Structure formats: structure tokens, C-alpha cells
Image 1 (cartoon, helix red, strand yellow):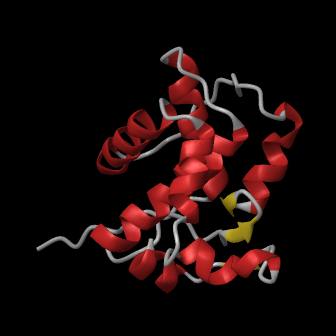
Image 2 (cartoon, one colour; image 1 turned 180 degrees about the horizontal axis):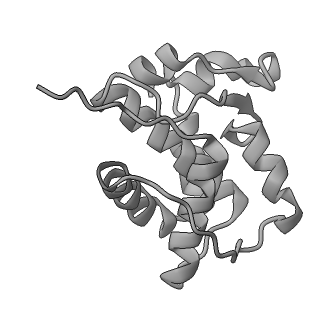
Length: 147
């Protein structure tokens, strides 16, 4: 029996893949949407596969979960759509999962995504605590168990 090595990516690689997909499919996303998509992808992997998709930390910021490195990479776009083309190598199993989440979430209003991540009892709310936990890391176990 051959044991398959699970590939780990950087959050920036996943962000580039999602941005490229959305750009090519004429459905570009903002940085706010990108941050929420990264969060939902991380949670999907933690729940379904028992492992993170990427090792970068996710922090609790005012408008929800944020991966700082990817946020700062694209913050110059402000609330405008990020239209960039990248060639990122993602294996087929992973791209299938990523595509499903990206397609589902990219059509939603960014503020609806913020509201979804802000729900009472969820991981972001447990860490952010009305600003007391601003920019604090949301532990992966909390993301897995609380969403």
C-alpha cells in the first residue's frame, strides 16, 4: 500500500489560486472576500481532513478572520476587486475542494461573509471579544470545533 503524502500550501499560494480562478471566471473578489474564503477553506480542511490546508496563522480582526500575510499582500486594492493572473500548482483533490468553496462564497456579499464569521459562539467571537483579542491568533482547534 502506497501512503500518499498530504500536501501543505502557504496561505499566499491558496490566495493566488483563488484570485486567479475568480479572475479567469470573470467573478473577481475583494480582499475582504478573500480573507473569509481562506478561513472557510481552513475550517473545511480541519473538519473533513483533520489537518490544516495551510500553516499560516489566522487572526481575529475587526471585520473577521484574517491571514495577515495575504491581507497585506492585497490591501492596496482596498475594497476593489483583485484581478490578477497566477499559475499555481494545486493537486486535483485540493483544487476540487477549493473550487467548491470559492464558487459558493465569491458570489456572496462581503458583509454577509463577515456576519457569518462573527456569529456568537464561533471561533472569531471567542477570540475577538469586543476588541480585547484584536489581532490575536485564532487557534486551529477552535476553528475546527467552533467554526
